[in-house]
Picture 1: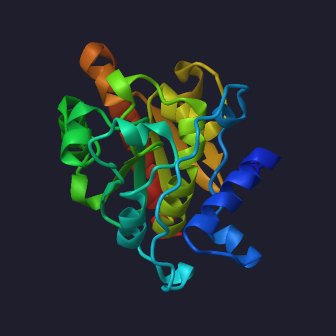
Picture 2: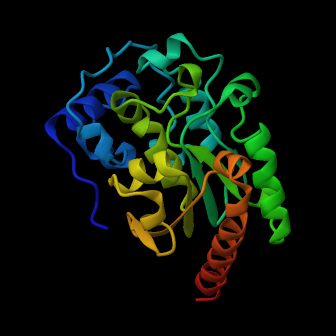
Length: 248
């Protein structure tokens, strides 16, 4: 898949945010460039951008860690979700993981505890991983956005765009070998498509050169347990691809 396009609005947003965190050199733009998703191009009114105190930019951008970026994200007020969240849910797991799972947004338990996938769906994901010989601590888990939408609704386009700065920086630092997208919302946002989940599942995609596999969200599997065997097949397919990439 080609590098996601940037329109003028996206470029202006990125420039604004870089100024906010104290990065002024044009050469630094690529280090903070966030992946632009299809939903960000939908013609809907953008949420007002709330200014937030600039984090300490004295440390060189290229030497920052996930913990540094998570600390910056913790005070983010770039979209209206900052007014309703309990806390930012940045991500969790092995910062050197080859496999990264991406869901749509934090739920109620995630918002309360500050960690992704810790509710009923998260416990199912843990069991699925364990069944294939993977521990939660061996992978990295994150969402397309870092704050819980009210009533667990789908993220709005302007919310996805506002969080792109954190999403892009996370993936840049993680450098995973494989991405697994959990559910329709994450698949549509990352792959810039509105195709049904069923048509996206069962074949490999690519995001900025990273192999991508789409599977069902664990919350869907709780409602439709008959589909669990398909997710089992998906995890086995991912493991096979990882073994190939790790051995090459």
